[in-house]
Length: 220
Image (cartoon, rainbow, N blue to C red):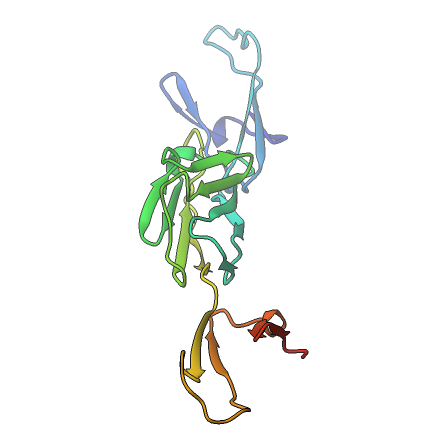
């Protein structure tokens, strides 16, 4: 028996009836292509094997890997139903699509769920197509998990890959401090005070105030 270029004899295999069993002296590495050949065996009359038996298999010890999530971790998204995506790969036996689970704020979606696609190496959730929407200011937590697809031995399952982003699509809120609407004032230089709030912050360069038809900005 020749395995990956090394020759093994009778002492290196076990025989059970019409079956020979070879246990490798050391574990194979992930990604190894193991070629083997049963080069010779004879029957009780001394007649050799009709033809050598040559085969190969590939060892996959690694779970799928996820990276490049979108929207990016910690980002602000200006829409209630964003598109969520993540690259999900297994470079040896491939990802078992039936094992894919995308968990969004505690709700688990699978490969067959509405809005889910897995094309190339990218897993995508179109929240609008899935009927999902989030409130402005809401933090969205996303996790993905999957296994690979070996033909023999249990699959390798990846650890949860998670990230968060925030949905924020409401604009600033303006509140008049002084003077109140319709007030009578007794000073000609009355100051107008307006409070502007937004959890995402204010872009001062966009402030536009019109007083008696005159436009004022922060550069005025």
